Image 1 (spheres, rainbow, N blue to C red):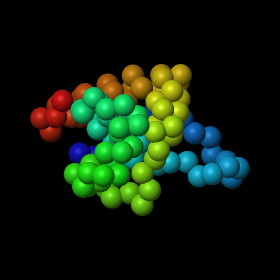
Image 2 (image 1 turned 120 degrees about the vertical axis):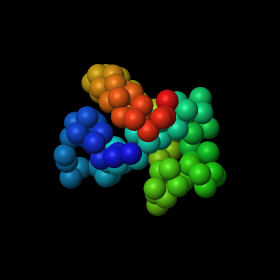
Image 3 (image 1 turned 60 degrees about the vertical axis):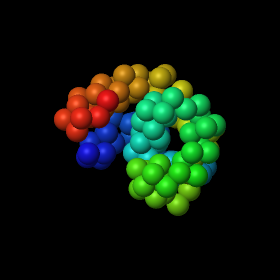
Length: 102
């Protein structure tokens, strides 16, 4: 799957700024949200499973650092407030059907 296709939908969630800590990669966060939905995980369980399961780490591309539950929650809230959640899940539905994923 071409995960980079989701970047334009999600990149607008963050302002480009040199202030504060760097943003978490939006593609990594999108992959985490897909895992969260597939496995019906809470944000806390998602963090734990992404740190523990090799299959999850492989799906995420073996990130150096897994975002914590609070970061996942804030990302979901920011997506909902901007309407990016509907755009993302609509794009996901269209893309994943070609791969046989649901």
